[in-house]
Length: 91
Image (cartoon, rainbow, N blue to C red; front, side, top):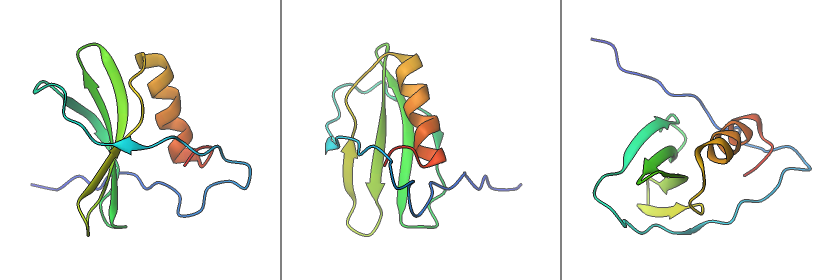
């Protein structure tokens, strides 16, 4: 059985990249579903999460276990933000 090696978020975003607003992680439902995730080899894992019809991006710093999240949003906006994260347009 092979393990999944997720995609990498760029180490250095574009010079004109937009900074995301990260908030403390708060589990507000027990029915969250991780739809996609980044590779954990760089010490920070990003997850695309859906819950109760809303979506957000969660990032966890593995060394400290600090968890932060973006605001909740509709799927189309969250999917674009997820794509922008991996292309270096946001950070």
